[in-house]
Length: 255
Picture 1: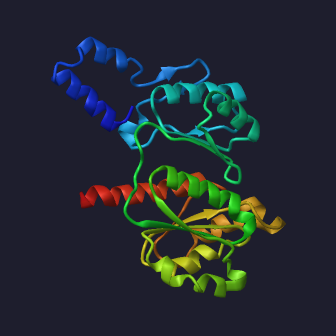
Picture 2 (picture 1 turned 30 degrees about the horizontal axis):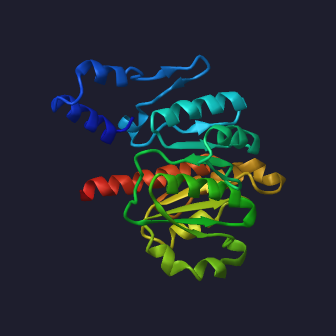
């Protein structure tokens, strides 16, 4: 259920095409549906603009498949993150339209109501190829939420001329998501080149002294470049989601 479908439901009641009892029956899962092992929030799209996202890690294959089944029945767009190939096979068995983004470890099923496209471009920048899985999670998330994403991969500060070659394109982006491990300096460099907000995503990529992502996290938090915000370690989903929210807020203001 999203705001557009809710509006159509209310219009049908007002126009006499649907009885109040029938409408109440369709809204019977408000505000959530108890599946026993999970309480599925069918109305999150009304409150937050996008349906509940399934975090697969720690859930059984059967649990993820059951949640997907109920979301698809409600017409929701499905985004399942940190999904293994086994989880995808179970989901695809019931929903052949499901798409698996292997590098991002994400499953997508498009719902009845399309998202976007939103005005503006999200530029997605990653330091190295090793950071690409986290960057891909950010890309898939932003795209399924209606964003146009341009990727600039493997442009870390160890060869900064690679980044500078794209400085003009980056300056035109509405939001820039920067994914980097090791020391995480790339976010500060990008923050000094662009006008728009920069969302920094530290990764756990790096040798021992990077402390599984703690070093780049602290570097990004201590950035001397203005306009840099930071999400959690390896949280590509959070970076992509926040970028989409920024574009949606701009769209509401323009509208």
